[in-house]
Image (cartoon, rainbow, N blue to C red; front, side, top):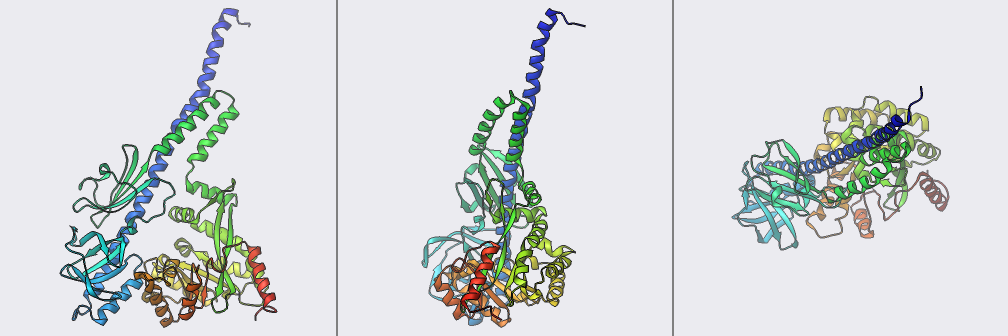
Length: 536
């Protein structure tokens, strides 16, 4: 049946209207969803940073409490005895956050781990007293470092000193992020990074212990995390200006596109998904698309600076060519349980290089990093043994690096390390001094090597309080007959000191930056030719 002209006249506008609505509604819904996801993502990042600030603060308090317990058990006659100073030195070497500890008398520090002061350091009366009885000095300055601010935490006999910036010295990926750690005793900020507005200061009863909150305050997204055991609260604020500009520009692009074709609409939705995709989802995509690759940081023998092996370092390049920093994607992978999948990709990627090393007639080795999650995987040993068998490498040429936090499950990890070493694999503890263990605790594990963290190597040719920490680590490592690799060597003066301390191996930009497999193998070949043949 044919439709008459008047009915066609009224139907055409209706069809156009329905077509316009059908086109614009998905665009409007996509923009609304994009706003919600953008806000949720911003809140998630703010909360992540606040939790990290609180973790650093609670770890610092834990180390201070352990230090005070150890000092209280030491005879106090006289207060600055050699035994007392030795205990303080051991605390300095074992603590990753404490700058130094000292003996208090009458509001003055009369001695510390590095000696007795001729003129005691005056700290005066504490500004705060916490619920658990700690005295707090939020703004200490000392004559030996007049341009540096410190926080002091003490009791009636001892004081622990940390850098004022330490609690908020966390890595952030955005500009304009404000961080603070607050003592609820007296509503006082202990440390801040960026600006801090009074409106962000919570009330004493706003949050229960162990709880957290994220909400908009003014033009900022503010996350607050309260400690479970201490009267501390971490605050992180992220500015909404960049967020608003991004969404405004996004809408100006999306709305005109929506009136055209479905292809352009699909393109706009794809942009929304791309902008709002969470980092764990991107990691999964990167693993599927094999976007990860490996670089090799040579390890040298400090005696003659010959390459003896390398550490395999995982890297990530997105399809557009952007490199994602490991300090961003590794913590995210650990938090979301994806780190083992990255380790599996690492084992696949290093296999050709291991095969090439197996063809040599020397002991050149390759080290790979294992996470806490890797150590709990039941199939780890089979994977490593299969890698050795497939590549033909000798087990001693495969080194496994475990962080100090990976040693926390003492019974399980100790048994695992014993089994791995029984098959000839070499086991090292990575970044020593930045985690939770001490060299004394490492006696429980049958380890081969400790890697001295760059943070300590950086100070060995300086005059700061921490410049002696590396020396203490080396001395105790010799006493425990542990091999050593010093990380992050950048200056010739560091090499001379490490040689004098009899540290056998090192790595750092002074010798070589991380490189591809081919460049690493060619470097070994050049070294062979210069030596007149491969070393036996």
